[in-house]
Length: 315
Image 1 (cartoon, one colour):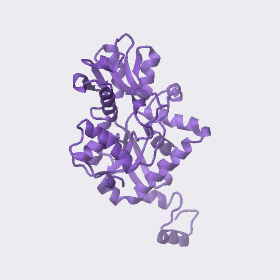
Image 2: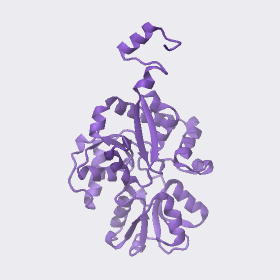
Image 3: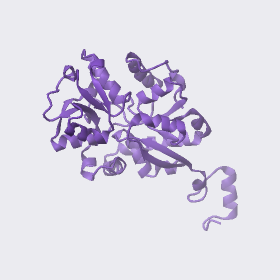
Image 4: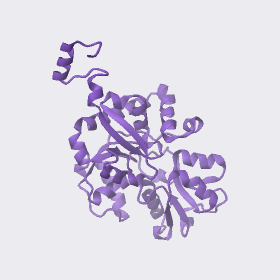
């Protein structure tokens, strides 16, 4: 018997659905393997893990780094992940293709003040304008992923035929080496990888192209299969609560050091890099209208096989 609880207390706790630290909570925590990629859009997830907010809300979280974002969706489908953070574009393509996945919450959101996403070229490369991209090889962290689709939209808005640009899929960690070796002319990159390229002097920013997009649109969605979400409603609520609490924690200036420590740990970057990087604004709540906005952008580019029923996509 637990040394601080009487038999009567244990019986009452069990009958009433209550929990005591170290007794019932440990027995009822839902194990969740969550997949993320290397950007600050997952800051609320990192903070919730490090501050014990998942545990507080009945979730035993395991964070797994996934180098190429679009592969998060099939990992959820296969059951190797219970939840993950695909970009809206990767998620909606999967739903359009027949996967029955739902949105539990949101990660980062777009901001015109966020300049850690951009088109970066080697320092001596002549590429400077959208028109200069024609005939060039551009590395993107995932074909059909958010940065790829938004970059194509930027080209379109500037009158460039995207079919005349060669896109090469490459994980973020490879971007510096690809530029250095001349394998690609430029990369669409973000976060600490962009900072490292620029601070080394080996690259320069050709365009902060995402600043043309409207603010507040989600850049990462926390998703699960509908079947898993329906079988684990308490875990869905607990996950939402945890990231909401993490967003509130991040809003307090006194917590900045803890937030950056969480980023450094899970993005596997040195403390000086974590201190210097911009943090994507959190948006834990996702709306149907936001999903429709991304769907419209993708439909223009021919990335949706069928139009999803957006109202049924949020758990």
